[in-house]
Image 1 (cartoon, rainbow, N blue to C red):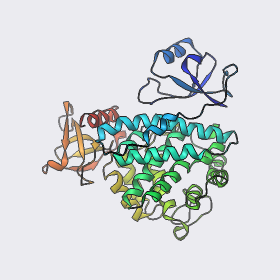
Image 2 (tube, rainbow, N blue to C red):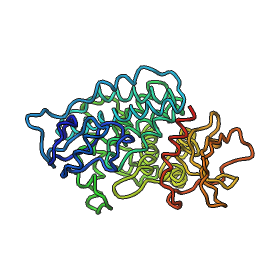
Image 3 (tube, rainbow, N blue to C red):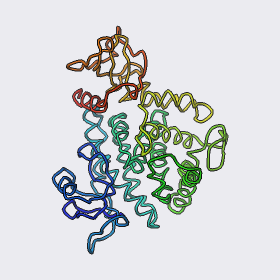
Image 4 (tube, rainbow, N blue to C red):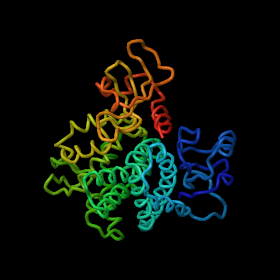
Length: 401
């Protein structure tokens, strides 16, 4: 059973399931571990983390404590303001929103594991908060939500897909009700994983055939779970069929293009993109640029080619965080989209390939204003010995306003 407790109640012998607050602000590279040494407990109490989720099935419980607390009411504070913001401004709010959203989704999954109905009030509030963030700046929350850890993937994946669905629906010209519908489908699409075996869900290696078949049941489990509380058939279908393929070779029912609604095709694209760009227990995620290249190859057999084109326009041909090679021979990381172009983003150039040296300081380039400079290729970060690419674009984006 999962419980959320203040950090001062944490004791040796407990098992931390997750750390509350932004995962960008603490020093732990894992967020799920046993508190089995005094130095671990002291490090946690000395840090910025104020609350943690503990798993009482894997460690000690808090004496006479209550079940996992409800998600914080602070989530509603993110739903009101839709005033346009710069990327730098919204990145800060998006990080705070993601921290609150993570707790809300963890709470929803925890309740579902105990057989409770999904709390649609929490889901509605969260979708509203995501819609407001995307309206203030369409790229901030998507970029922050991608920076999940392997440990909190299950919960933050739901938040990330919600954000991607909202942004995609807006780019497709859908009305406000349809945008919220898309966001709800993204948020709830993986709720069936609440009834997946945790040792398989968190396995740090390849699944066996039997384990893969078990995981393939999660869309059906989610559909059955949500039927009693979700009235929107399109949302339910997206949850049930987001692993189907256009050529009919997906699961759970092998449906092909004529039987897949647009919202289901959207969910398939957003789900795949976030999954392959995220670090998982068994593999490192691809960079955004590499991910789009691979996904383009999966059209039209797996993914809807027309919707995928709109998806690329939504996040940019070179999404934030992409490693790119410039015409001048520099390497850079995309740190902000261009106002009216998907091919000329803002790039922080940091490495001279010919000279084999880092640029000190790195250069912030607006390619839209530099006709002599252009991106000639996306690069795979795995082929380069750089470990601070995420920090580079975050710092550049924040300083750009």
